[in-house]
Length: 309
Image 1 (tube, helix red, strand yellow):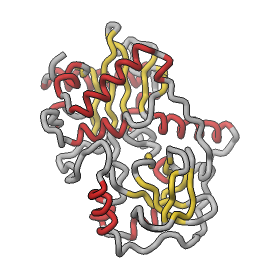
Image 2 (cartoon, one colour):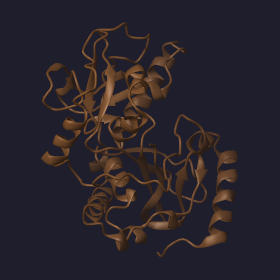
Image 3 (cartoon, helix red, strand yellow):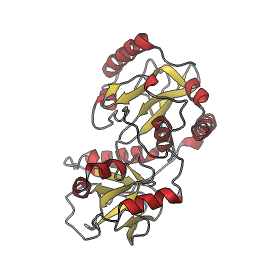
Image 4 (cartoon, helix red, strand yellow):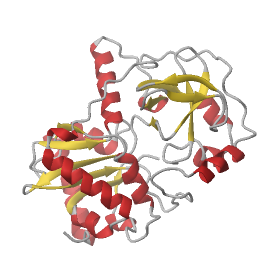
């Protein structure tokens, strides 16, 4: 399968967008709304190393740049949130399908190797890419560059396992199901749905939460690995500390407090009201970067890459 082609591709995607929304109203949410926003593919790419894991020198740079940030460990009154402190049940369903498990391993290896030819082979004329709710051209990416943001976005999305979901993009994608990665996002959706079933309609918006994945993840007083640990979290939802986020210069917001910075930190409010920072290695946006895979004529392909900055 080659690269996508110009005008006809855009026409096809616009038709897909309209038809799919009629067939399944939930697609409108997937493509256009803040619940699952298609954002972030911009010409101003991150000027940071796009590596699979942070190197010690990278962390040192983060620590040095944040020496002057005001500590955030002083307890504060946490704003009401039905989901703050909610424990998540994570179930990676990858192994339920040996075929998908093998395919996913190939995709992950291709991302590590920056194998542009393999990635092009799993992209179809109906693979969706997005920018702030709008569909964009595949050619916006430069897969031949190992530092293109595409590679980090894929690493981010594939870092946490996958789950099976209903396919909302039929009939173009004829499969009954899709594979959604990472599982952190579907786990948040499940927790939100459970609260709604319990007649709790006034839940704080998606963008006010942080999903922390991992066992005994450290919450620190400042955004560096040398600051004291005030608490640990294990697969839990906490509040985003928007006040701390907005109090720092815009450049720090973009470079340090970004979920898509592999050596960044996210300011959070814990259920007991304490403020702290969680490494982006373990912190996810509920509406964050994600990918879905589905079958086309019996062959697994990349269905959608949703990027959220």
